Image (cartoon, rainbow, N blue to C red; front, top):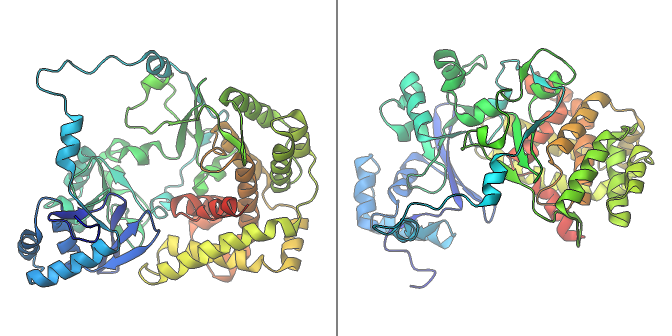
Length: 487
């Protein structure tokens, strides 16, 4: 079959995420193509056609199934519509039967083998929780209004619909309140619809309706574990905190809150098996073209965490990046971090320009379909405005010369990142250090932008957390990957 030929039984491709959004009472479905980064907006009628294309029906069957949902269309029109989606790379042929055949054990086959020794060892690795931190949640729902997807497993979704059957009439039909995590076929997780960028189960005053009716255990696992992050570094599982909510920074240095993790959990094997525990690679990249042994980097990270914080954390991170590229993971590099020179606006400029380009593109896309009340839309616009303002050399220079407004917050941010190995990911360490310095600078500029927009959203109380949530949760961090490719 030609790649351009519509599959006999098409379905939405696995790399496409469908998300239902309600803007006021206007319903729209947004298709996110993870490969190209493109977005496509569909109305309810078009989505009925796409959702019927689940890999089990031919075009005529899709038309019949959609008609049962009130989306009537002639077969040639359905054919033409699906052909357009296929040409855009959004459809694929069904291969679930082949996948199932490959993954299912043959009849009479023995049970799954026992875990390998290294897997057994991993289960016994201690949980090393970020010390001296407890969370004080303000209950205002900032974290429930900023992310693109909130995942529920089948049991969690059923419980939510039972507790609040009135939400989007989901008590009667799962698909009215939830969408598949990927594609259009049933999968292990569903994502809840969003109303003006908010989780559909979030009450108007910022309280979770599921928590109010069923207690904390009624919420999905991701919400219950947020903002904890888990990384296995070969020695322990580092449990740190994602600095992506105003509550996290407001809790820094404040005792008496909720523990980040149930203290009864001691080793990795005690964790819920659904929790995503990332694993550091054996040889993480520390600079473009250079790697280091995992154990060496873990030891270096501990030394850096114990170092004296620099007067300016952003300047320290940029100086450390230069030193890592020149010297590797040496004590001299850490000394450069502790006593950095002032940040050079010329060095920061290309990074800020790249982030502005990414944020400005996203702001234009969001304006076409997101509600003006949507926090993600407003935050993207603020970041685009801040990075544009910082393109003015005199303004950037003045900002860099001024002391940070919240140096204690910035030091905590770095401590949490180091403890959780959050500087290690898609980028080499040296580039990730520069990226984090850029985020700090943008967060310092954001209050002026937000004040000019007359925004009193509680999420704005901690600009650094807002920047962090937007960069990771909405793909703005891809600007740093672009910078890496340009080097």
